[in-house]
Length: 165
Image (tube, rainbow, N blue to C red; front, side, top):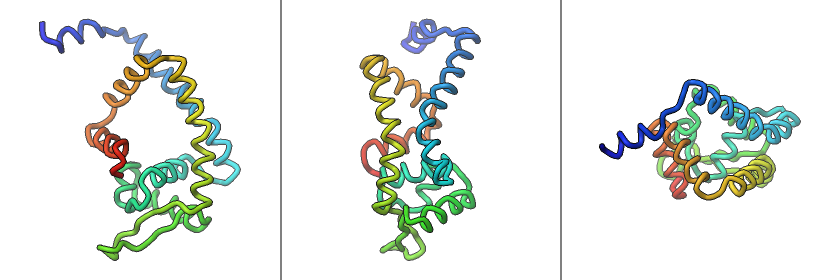
């Protein structure tokens, strides 16, 4: 029996178990986004603004096309979000040095403070859940999440994790 066949036989899940997993993801996501949503609501921002701030913070100087790829949204949608963040002084858009057509994105001091506020509760929540679940569960959870990603997004996630933006 190959490793793949052995793994398949060890991981037989019923439709009901899969539904429960899907529901757990929905409820966990709702809990994960609750605190940032309250902050965003007070600023008339949405989750798209939060995602943009998060990834610009992870890779300062990222160009707009890279952010577009990471977020998987339309150019029109991203432009609307970036226009607001730039106008509100959260993000600075700089002309590229090598290619003047490119725009590179950086958080301003206000943007850094907002991103920290938004992610603080999420980091605290993740830390508590990871501690409660233990190292093996954390590793398994990461494997499950990565297995759910499209191959290109898995590569993007790895690139960001390695600090290569």
